[in-house]
Image (cartoon, rainbow, N blue to C red; front, side, top):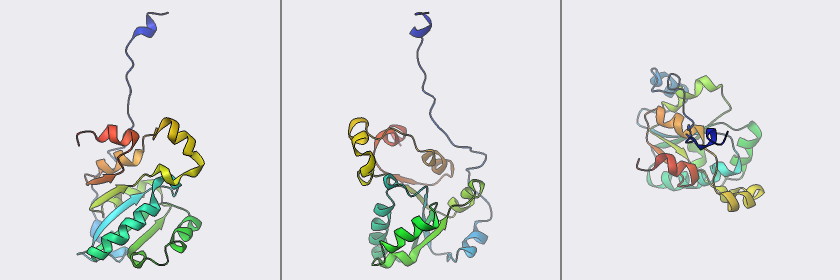
Amino acid sequence: MQDDFKKEIVVVPNGADTQLFKPQPGSAEKRADLGLGQEERVIGFVGSFMPWHGLQDLVDAFEIVCQKDNSVRLLVIGGSRDQIGQLIEGNRDKRALKKIIFLGEIDYPLIPAYLDLCQVLVAPFNTKRDEGRRKLYDKYGFWWCPIKLFEYMAMARPVVVSDVGEITAYLDGA
């Protein structure tokens, strides 16, 4: 039995369904449906509104981006009505709020068509915003592998992510 356990271990990373997550046709119609002008560039985010997903950081950064470039919009996919409402309420003072499109939770197969509208996709993970798991992060670091990263890359778009844990390992050299 010891010989069986001497074999090399192979780690098989997560990935994306590249038949689903790929550049999509028909983005002009979707742009019109969302009220996006042809000249507007779109930054996209998909995910839940958990503290470590860094949505507050994204809104803060987007405020700065909008001060420099008024032709940018932020498309946020995910979050319940209550979560979206709380994020909006906590950022009422930000002028960029009117430039954010909140789609809420949508059916998974519809996500690629919306991501295709985006010129850049973001994953601003921030474990410092998750007080409930602070001790775990301090001990183990950022230990999970976000599927959204692979889905974003399958869309053939530039990806802006936090330099943490497994994300750094997967993008090393990219």
